[in-house]
Amino acid sequence: MNKIYNTPLHVAIIMDGNGRWAKNKGKPRCVGHVEGAKNVNKIVSFAFDSGVKNLTLYAFSTENWQRPQEEISTIFSALENYFNNFASSTANGKIRLRVLGERNNLPKTLLTAIENCENQTKDFTQFNLNIAINYGGRQEIVSAVKSLISVGEEITEESIANALYTAELPNPDLIIRTGGEKRLSNFLIYQSAYAELYFTDVSWPDFTEEDFSLALKDYKNRNRRYGGV
Image 1 (cartoon, helix red, strand yellow):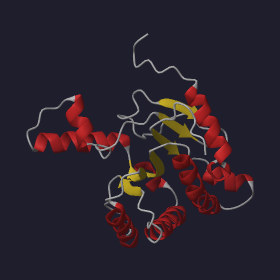
Image 2 (image 1 turned 30 degrees about the vertical axis):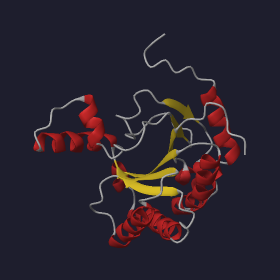
Image 3 (image 1 turned 45 degrees about the vertical axis):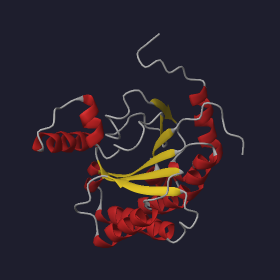
Image 4 (image 1 turned 90 degrees about the vertical axis):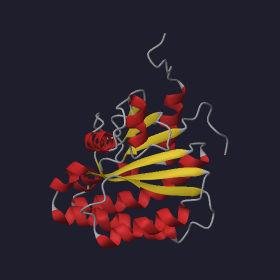
């Protein structure tokens, strides 16, 4: 596959619209999350084939605990299945998987699946796949600052960045949000200071390789000045 010129090094995706997708089809919201989970492998493969080296997916926020328990359980079950399947197919030795977020309150079986995936892929270096679970940008910053204070380290932009979950990763160049909403929803708010934002009305279960390609092409035409002229 030909690489798109000026492909972003790090793309982050807010995978939104699963519940509304299901509702529009007259189905329970949980069905939307199941269908959305089926779409992940396809988009992950396309992103890496397109030249993206780092991909971060927003799967469950700290605010999502306010949702009905059935919906939360469906999301966690889908994530657990994803990690278990991922761990059994890592023979290619290319994709390192990491989970970003607080792990307290996550089901033990999900934690086990996460740990197995991370351990099995920790030495892979070609691509980074990051899944944000029980993640909140504000909480991440507070946690980072507290950790710096606890060891007496000076609070600077660099020290905070190095204390975030994403310390080993480049900041996102492009953030895509599906589902029609136009906000970051507490996602990578420190890291996204100069990220390009792309919003689409397409819900996550319907988000295709072509939709992803449109986002990359739009990014290609952006003029990233980082405060300059």
